[in-house]
Length: 140
Image (cartoon, rainbow, N blue to C red; front, side, top):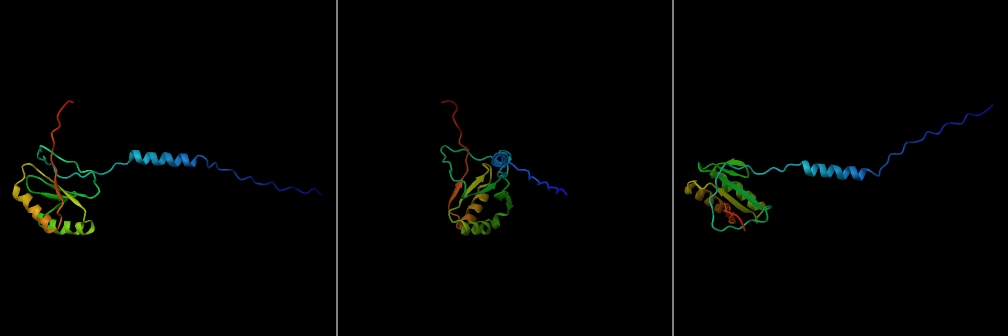
C-alpha cells in the first residue's frame, strides 16, 4: 500500500514593509485634520496703543476678558468678579510664573477693571498685562 503524504499548509506572508508608510500617513492625516480650540472670549474692542510688546511664550498665560457691561470670563468661563480672587489664587499656587492677560473693552467702566485688578492683587497674580490693538502702518 502506498502512503499518502500529507500536504503541508503554507502560511501566507504578510508584508510588513509598508506599515511604516501607513503610520506616517496616519500621523500626517491627523496633523492636518486636527483643529485646535482657541479662546472665544467676549466680543470686545480693545483700546489702541502707541507702543506695544508681544508676549512670546503662551504657555504661562491666562486670559481674562471683560466687556463693556462688566461681564468677566477667565479662560472662556463666565465668572463673577467676586470669585476672581479664589480662581486665580489656585492657579497661581500651581504656576507662580503665570502671566494674566487682561482683555478689557475700551468702553468698559474703569470701576469694573479696577475691581478685577484688586482681585488679582489679592490672589497674588502680580504679572498682569493689558491686551491692546496696535495700528500697523501700511507700506514699507
